[in-house]
Image (cartoon, rainbow, N blue to C red; front, side, top):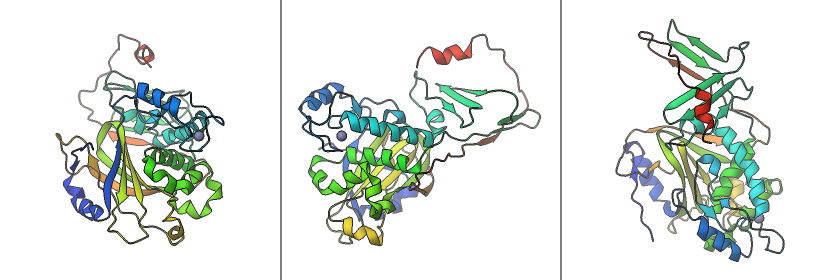
Length: 338
Ligand SMILES: [Zn+2]
């Protein structure tokens, strides 16, 4: 078994103590290590899809499928038991997750030498691109005030709404990754959970699971990682779910409870209790304290389209302001590498 040393900021230590009375680390998946060859090899031997349970005779396994969505950052870790049909389906949900994250995917892009995904506001008036330390903001057209810069007083305001997304699809994208790292031995216990992921409309009693605890931090991580926690055997309170899933991406960490466990199904009608996992810093060589900005619960039940307000306001010093004539085409800089 591989051991990972992590750091927990001082602000989260009490939380960590409490959490450890209920849960223990169970599975981990980073996105740094590549496994394309192995996953392709394993895929040839896969008998059935982890998600829809269809056999090779009923579906195909020819696509390379990411365990953690590549929209959350370039990654080279692939799964071997997701069929092509499910992959197509989940890709749609991942687009909603990307829209939900909005500007965060641009500003928190950390991998040097590669361009961040671009952002375009819902009305198409503001575009943002980032490469290395350079952030390029483009305002389309003059007849709107989505971008206001007051050079005299040193103030700027950018009005931005993310592209539309369906909260329920954001939840599905997160849940798919959670079910994706669930070890083989636990899968039979989650038959209802897998069915719920594919056909939520058939499981109204599990609706209360469609939410995520969101932790926002001052730390930005370059590559996403996911963890699964398992309830300790000593915990007899049935209101605590068997497994919790945590996904760290950029400056955010999502936490959700895995729905539809065989032994837990009946208690969900009374509601479940969520122990809050501490924010885990993988880079224990460079520990930080006081990085957790806040936590909130995101309600992801709605199937109606909405957008997040990612407007920004900032101030800048006005002395020594200078306009610079760039001697190169900035558009080309972003074009040459995808
Ligand atoms: Zn499938």
